Length: 265
Image (tube, rainbow, N blue to C red; front, side):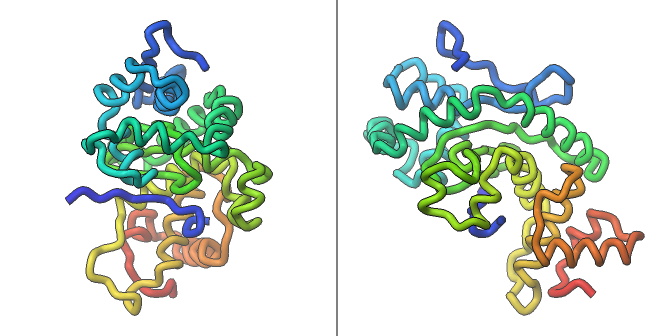
């Protein structure tokens, strides 16, 4: 059964070719290669112009990304529904979302810094998890809902959730704590955290008495901090894990993630 892991912010606190085809990002670790596939640009082209070649590219080159966007992020139906393409475009006719489309392209005209940080993070992940399959990282534009979606070895980043703590729409709809996490600097930590979660999911059948949900999130976030090399996630649960790991230096990150204790002793 397919499992899709979705980051909700409340839980885990245009250079286009003449044929409108964008080259996929290479998922290898070369220094001059981007790890990020700019699916958002093809999405933007179709939504703003109705360009049929852009729609074809979404369907042929990015079937998984398009399915997750329509079904898991926007929740507007199934990718094979009759009339879904028109429904998709109509959904973004809202004036707030029209402004969002433009703002994303301005704010994220370049993602070179994010790609660079992802390369460093994945190198560290390879050391901790030698058998890891590097995911395909791609960007998309949602509707201020999910920040990150993970399906198999694909990680989708909704750029609409990382426009900065002072973005006007955020000021009206999100708390200070939530907005503090909705910045460009949180893209890499969120990608790492939720890809690790997909690798070490909570086992089925565990009751709340057997596992403390917030502490479990704290473990994931603490590990993400180690991978990105900074304290991106800061909360009491992360602090508790930090104290525990400093007192148990013999424990590896994988042992920590494989532990399902209700509390850290």
